[in-house]
Length: 494
Image 1 (cartoon, rainbow, N blue to C red):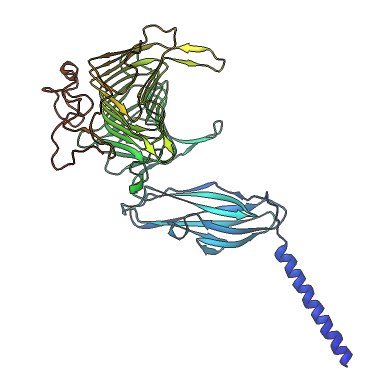
Image 2 (cartoon, rainbow, N blue to C red):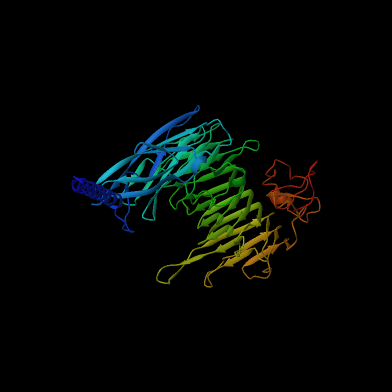
């Protein structure tokens, strides 16, 4: 009897140990291959609801295990953590950080994502971004999340070009953008051939990270701002730390076959490039007229002009990481009452290239030089100044003829006053222009500025008002701003 009980206990213990062993095997029966990855039904979720009240929206994507073994996802979390506007539900489990999610071989699971925002909260960014981050065997993958944070007009990609593997939105008919709601561009915006995009006074245009506007054959941009209500083109981050941060968006590109463009009273800021222009579509008028406009805080170049025909006045180009104005491959350029003020400075980023660069050739992949005619480069009643000892670069191919640049009644920071292809008439050199506040991007003049009254009245007659509407008819100052007495403001330059 006693022996039978002992045998029974041994059998029970053995069975229990066997069950524990089986359970342990099941728990450890996961593929530990360090190269293993998941697949997703989408690489990003775009919440395209335009919110007009406090609201939420839910979307989902699927996670696939296309392997023949079980997978343990050690972590699924929102990169933004508990501060995120998003919430996730993974296989029935909710939160911002979910651990140890299992997927069987050749199986899948759903991830539901919800976003809740108050679009009337003006401190919200226009575009809210986050990502769902997956960790499997120390490999990290993610799915991007994007939602609209405020009530606005949103332009997002809706066409896919398989040959180029690119998504974009296409404007196919003459279009007018106006306020008061801002216009937000997410991704690439293309303007179709023979189409004009007009942006009316007071309108705000915001571009998401790396987003761009591209003008195709014979298409045109008309910016019709006013002194009191300029058009603003900038990034979509509205927080205070982004107010003057370069590189927040891509560029405005007038392609080589695009039409005639006119920009009046605009502020274009905080991008990678301000305007890139390859167009020389017209032989009877400038391809770009730009007036009463500020281009500032560009990571690369403010105006990148390639063989173009440009007429500019009352223009400010400031704080660009490479060049303020770059004129390449020839062209025709006429600038009057322009202020170039380049004090670009970011931690770890030191500008080493001059603010104004002039060139008349390019070299192809075979090393063959192609010279293009530099019909005219003229800076009149202007200021070209910055933090470098020389803010001019003139690179003309030696065999080119009549490739000259004229600087008249202008203040220029340069050591090249005797350069054979650059002519200076009635100009000043290397004198501090005495801007009101460099640190505040304020390039109005102090009362002791050397440029006051040094510009030509004859040239000023073609631009009788400065960028702020002040008259030049009795006294003309160099640059985009006339000096005037400013009440209750610090006169010292930072």
